[in-house]
Length: 301
Image 1 (cartoon, one colour):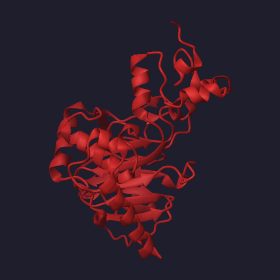
Image 2 (image 1 turned 120 degrees about the vertical axis):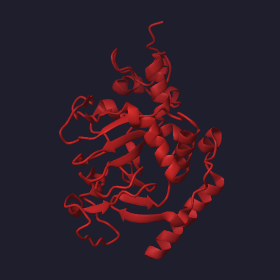
Image 3 (image 1 turned 180 degrees about the vertical axis):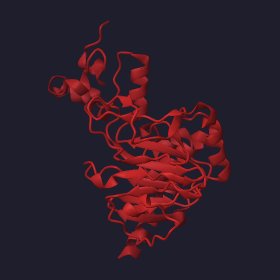
Image 4 (image 1 turned 60 degrees about the horizontal axis):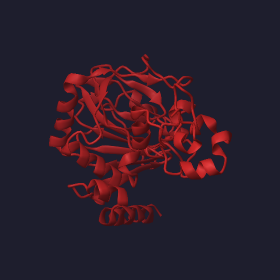
């Protein structure tokens, strides 16, 4: 049965590589074709896959160079307010690149869209992270539990974690709740942290894809994951969070402050009374505008 599942996965990815999606075609196809033989299914709970050699060594070094002089203390999201705050559970440093910051970054984004079957515009900007000795990120969830963040393109449906450097010891990505498909024999080369669930060792160029939501779009608590402390060496990684809706549309709306709709379905929703039934999302407030101001006819001018 596992053989048939694997063959089906290869077929789906192969078809997608050949046909692409309308969104990817608009933004350009990736210069490096996907190779489904490099993809291994790790788990169905959560749905997790590893792509060996997703990035070249030169691409990894390029991302590190872009980020190295711009790192700041990593933040976490407050579950009640949705604001970014400092937390002892996360001790790395990091920064965000711009979407399509250069040709290399744009090509990576197109490649991620092709592999995940999710449009480029649904993704956040790449976050580059740096972990030094002892630094880690305790197990956490990438989907949102606060209304403010959930409105920013909807829940995060998937996470792509790309490893940009080799780590001599530690730094594994661990899934404490995973019901892993593959049995892991862990010797002394694994950190104690990595023995608390299914774990993935960081290998330069590899990419880990896992889904934060179930197939019915409900949150998957099995996607709980963490970054184990670095024991020897340092760890560089790049994270791409992907939402269920267009994240770019939300950002354009938020940055410009224009009286526009942040979703193409706003007129339909407004016509069915959603402006009154769901004002937090449709209209919002003065400090946190909704996504359908134009269709709800609440513009000040």
